[in-house]
Image (tube, rainbow, N blue to C red):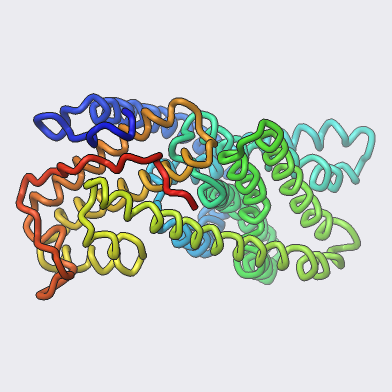
Length: 430
């Protein structure tokens, strides 16, 4: 499709357009891949469970799991809050969490234990510290970052930039920390049960659940930042250097954290926490808030062109360009027309967002020839999802209550855009 042709409208039935049919086939393949991934990760989880039970016992696993659940909820919720503009597919986030909790933890346990056993003959009792500081950071960050790298390589359309990289990296790391916390809390419970004291369990829970629940997500977010930069880079040098730099930063932070707990009887833990971890934590927070604000500006800049092309109604621009407008719209639709219609509007909002971000990436020149096919598919999805929403009573004008915006009237069911897109390059000069 060129930008001088009429907009893509699903021919006949809404699913009749070739681009729309291609997206349906791609989603079906995605479902199959997700099922296979869940089966594989389930097997890894069972193997890991067997290792945990053999080490800390059934009671230790139960107590450790209950304690590990406390920090994982707020951590994952924080990443979901950052991802509100263009929410990632829930099944991909689930696979990301299970990758960290099952496969990455199992593989890291095997590799770290093997490295410790191999070095014990030369280092003796120091092999545990050597493995924690000089082996575990490389192994664990590689295993966690491999999932995010796989998304960039094989699901590049859904991987938009730094924000997506940090969200996926954070969810993977949250899964890894969840499984690791089960082990540490289970050990503390077993040790306390043997000695008749419960103080060790409480200390581990406070340390890992209160003071450092974001430790692993912070480390792996460096990889997400590097891969996010590479996703929109226009030079081969940046595409290679950014992920390598992010991985090395993740290993460095991880090694510093482990070293602070291993050397000097943990006396370096507080200085490292205050001088390295907290500043990096606030840096990532500020970067994510900036990226989310930038994403909003990108979407707001594209929406007037969509309205001019006839892909959306001009009155919808104001509602789509802010999270408050979108959420208010959905609440009004749900209140007046029910959750099914609200879901249709939410799908329409998501499709518009994805198309706006894709067009911005195309303007930067960071995508190859496949971007045009992605554009056709997303545009067909926007028009089809809007047609579904228009067909439901009050779906696209419930948010305006009794007084709609000036010069606007609800389109009739089955409405299609008839205006050709503007005769100009895909993006206005900025």
